[in-house]
Length: 599
Image (tube, rainbow, N blue to C red; front, side):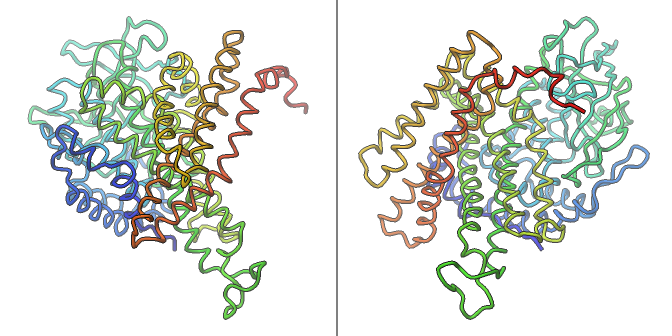
């Protein structure tokens, strides 16, 4: 049976030793409670919950799935009880303001716990995960009355939340949205329309569900400039703030999916449902981006989760599975054959998983610390962190989910034929991971956002904000022979990143299609460079510890060895992406659409 153990040592290494989260909290307003002892206690308890409660339910959720009957969704056995433990443990309230019932701890600390929850059982973790985005939206854009009515219940975990964007005819292109919002005499709105692919849209785990819904007012302008945002609860709320009569929103069906069976993906029908405006009229998309950015970072975390899960179970299997002898001679002569972990190709797969999981962890938690600053930093600090997040969010979301899927597939490959059958869990990991490259914006959409909106529309300013950080790091370590292999390659790639951007920008001035033609390769190139930066940082930290005589020699040595593997065997992939993105758009657009298939 597959297992999950929370990688507490690696989380500590990344957050405390590489990213210096303790100094970060010491300088972050309102983070006084986040002491090293507090962090350790929270992570230890979070690990127990993930390992003992959620991990055993992962396969249960996949096999049983959710059931739908007469508008009611029933979650798999144990899911509801696990959620009650989650609420009783205070996990939902961890990173939210004390004024609304939260514990006031930093967002980044909450994400450390979320990593463990998501890796143990992604389908289950989506239920509170969607609530977190709803809470952030209400915190940023809700009125005080809305916060007291809805946010307090979401923070306590008594109620859960969703985001309702997609409709049958519009996914990415929300300008085509048709759901209507009719003003009512009491100041509310009657919301009518159908939303699809709504994760956690209906379930039996909480007393109420707060839907955050995009809809159009009667006189709204066409396109994205005419979209407003509304709160639509499953049950209307009475004067005492409790769930009362049923609102005009119902689940019409749940989807039959490739993976994440334990999470209900719903068709939601709004039939004159009572809703309440969040933020200004016709500015709903602006407000929703608060939710979407949270969700995109959460989906990036999904890529890390599937990489980590694949790595742990692949290493365990490779140590036990006996097949053939090592080419250089028997490594376990007392056994019938050698464990497959001795074979170079198996090690290639395991090290690829390790490089993506541990490199992805550094990127995710770096981003989460930026989120802290956007919420509690000074105006200048917030502006700087916002700019970095605008660049790194699409990279993290798309790159880490692409590499997460690669790592999950490598997990199946390590198991051979056993990976293809359900009892080992590896094929579930692949199926559950596949959605991560689709929802919250496909890889192609993230790539267009990165290259078109974030980089070229800022005339490279947003990119330079991060390349300056890499440049400073390289300059600091340039003369140190211990780090020459990393610093030399990273410095060249950092300069090339800017040069390539300029070349694509010049091409795009003559033909805008060049942006779309180059975008995915540009994003993947960017992702490999970003992870190279974090692997270089981890290598420096590990080398310093070894030089100081650390008694954890194996741990730190493995960091240097994985960094070397990443630079020698993964980073050369950038050459393919450079050739492809600079080859132009003609090789994509010259073929007539009628000539794609001849039947």
